[in-house]
Length: 325
Ligand code: ADP
Ligand code: MG
Image: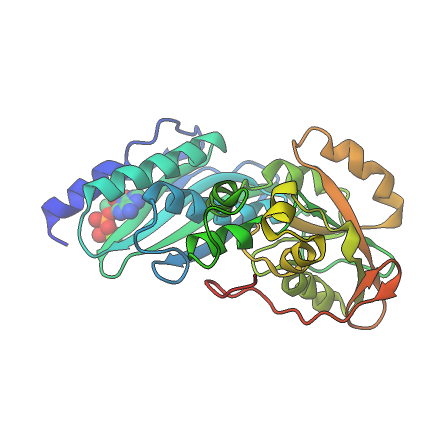
């Protein structure tokens, strides 16, 4: 990009309201410099959103920014980390002030809420895509890993599941936007709330955790394979929003969607029997519910149960823009 176009873009990203004391040098030099706190480890995660794959090219830039940052923050939440710094690699066909205005609004609103500072990035010309690298801190040795689940541990999820897939089906015009709660569900697809407080609260209580980006079945599979274990899930225990049930018109169909819905950004975690009684207390100040949906067992695979009896539902993992409804 030409230097004038570039300075135009840079101007947008140097405007964050809040700044952190541990950022020694932010945007403007060859590198940013940060001062990590003592006795902490740094958790780092990168994700890319490509127009046409992860969001529609004409989607509201404010929602795209929220979705991009929220999905990255969700990875920090899943480790029990506290967000600190973020960098942004932005590729766009040409400088588009209106798009940048909207994008920055959505980005900084969420960044300021979680006190994460944009410390640098890169700007290039090409098909629209957004890559974020988030960094957070976690007390030494306390990060929540995918491995660590053991036989007998209880399986939990935060919030409710399935709204994101339902919202996506509205965005893609597969479902009519006149159906009940279509607009609410569409908004939930873009505006997930990273479970940062929940992740922090679970650090000393959960044996493993991850965030649900590919669908509960697929993601729980990651926890189980990393510990060579199986799971039994009570499908009637899966938390569903009233909006989702009304939108699809049938509870069983809503359960199937909830098992496969990706980009939920809720946490799925396991808890040893000895810590089960603490869950309600540690979650009480996080603003989100956690629901026990099953238990870890020996062997491999995921068994779905309804009133104690196994059900054979054909389920698939979530693929961006693929129908699950
Ligand atoms: P260099 O050529 O040394 O990589 P750049 O000209 O790409 O430097 O960037 C100059 C400064 O602006 C750097 O501090 C960089 O981190 C920052 N920057 C560039 N693009 C972005 C962006 N999209 N978001 C945030 N900071 C950015
Ligand atoms: Mg550069």
